[in-house]
Length: 141
Image 1 (cartoon, helix red, strand yellow):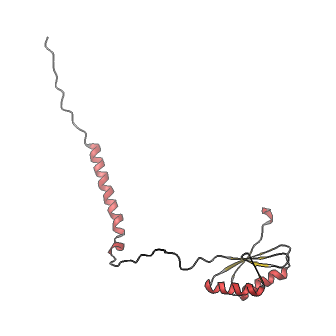
Image 2 (cartoon, rainbow, N blue to C red):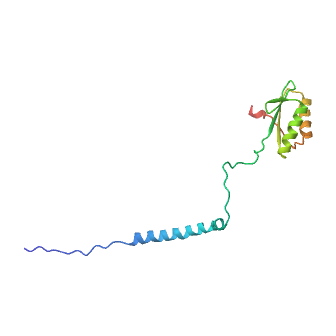
Image 3 (cartoon, one colour):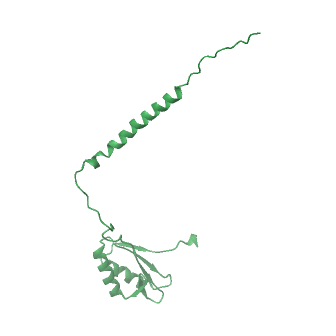
């Protein structure tokens, strides 16, 4: 009995997924080209920018100065005990460096009102316009 030998058709490769990937790559590179054109103005400048070793700000950012008025009348400016005259001199020289210098006044609740008022007046004499007073909310106690 003779055996029947069947020849199967040649198997073909499905090219559809490969074509999809090629089209996706073409779209990706077309979109990527648009983004690279945005930076061409930076590349067209024909100057050589100098390099520096330590590039820092020329001056430090101003921070608010803290004045503590204690119960016994002592005045502390940034952890340094001062008189009203010294306070005015310190704030005036600091204001010359930073025109918009801010001050936070922290008075003890049992300190005399006159001492805190004198500190306010001294700050105004020194030209400080950004004056703040530190208080605590009763609800948060």
